[in-house]
Image 1 (tube, rainbow, N blue to C red):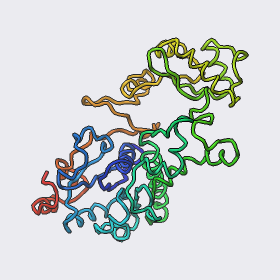
Image 2: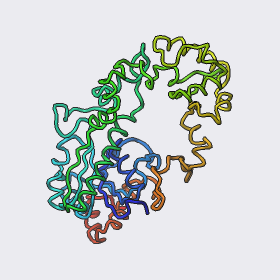
Image 3: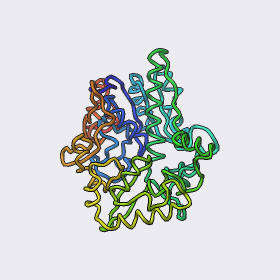
Image 4: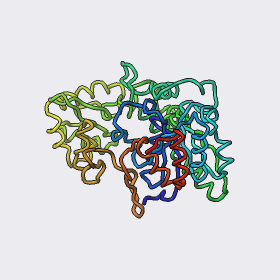
Length: 382
């Protein structure tokens, strides 16, 4: 059933990091009930529910939160929950009548997780924002990209999912652990700017030690060095090179058919441009597949750059079951792995308008109460 079997979570529906956090915990065995809007027009992106993977492994209910009875029903869910996840701007849950003070009065042991970009306080707390804004103000965006080019947007992985969802999950589990001994819940304020800044701890240390340059594309592992970058192959595809350590770098040159004595020294920054040109010229002589074969059994840290669908078919991913194929869908499997209490995908993402009754019954609400709410139009009838 997963290591979080028995943990109950109320998740207020949203997009991005909050539901992704809920998915991670649900895959690990937590019982997650997602509270969504009653109106079909308000349910978010125009996408079939089965493709909305961050909502897998959860049950879902559609509720009118503008109605007092709808708010009252959510409070009933909160009464037996261990965690609550919400990703609204500061003050929205309070205006709904579901703020942390009210919810923890109902359930003192509740851990209340709040996912925002800017945090619950500070001068920017009420402003809209997205991943790109959060990584811009924490210095990350300026650090990613070529030296003589513009900053490169690294998808929305760093702010939304790494600095956001993963830090919220860690905070929720830490607070849940503490609540087991104290009997008291607390609020977890997970701001993406805080999480992203934390992710940069090593780089801030290196910067102040003089080991890292605050200049894009000028460091060993930011694409600035010729031994940690990508190279175009003869067929217009790419190989990724991460030969940082001396031994790995030596093997890289050996597989490329180059002699160290004929090249600039590996860490001679002044000649990195020249060294990059030499390596690029060699990589351009063969296709990506040919180079993949050359480095197949090598510790040179060289890999083909695959697209998303190619990645799902890679032999290593297949051997580990990194991607799962069910009902015509391909999706990343649960992570990490557990030896005794394996994680699993409980179910595909569900449309709350069709799962409301079943989800509430499974949570423990009496059928008569569900009938009452459905008759009043406060919840979806099915």
